[in-house]
Image (cartoon, rainbow, N blue to C red; front, side, top):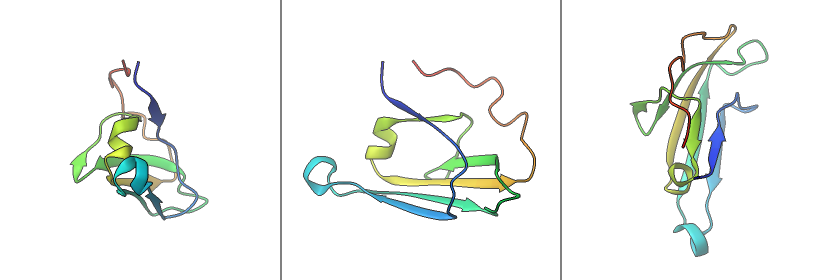
Length: 89
């Protein structure tokens, strides 16, 4: 089984995770959350490195490879957002 991370609403609209040069080649994983606020706390859509992400999780290696996660937040849950998403293996 490979480590996974569940997506959730970030507290800040922009976060950068700077990965250790010694262990992860010094990559950066950036997370942006459009419309982030106390009211807009539900993920409406997600994208990973410019492509739509139709699941509620990321694999550890996707984060460690560096890149960017883009979230769009809204005031109500998106019931269809990850519907039918395969479970991680």
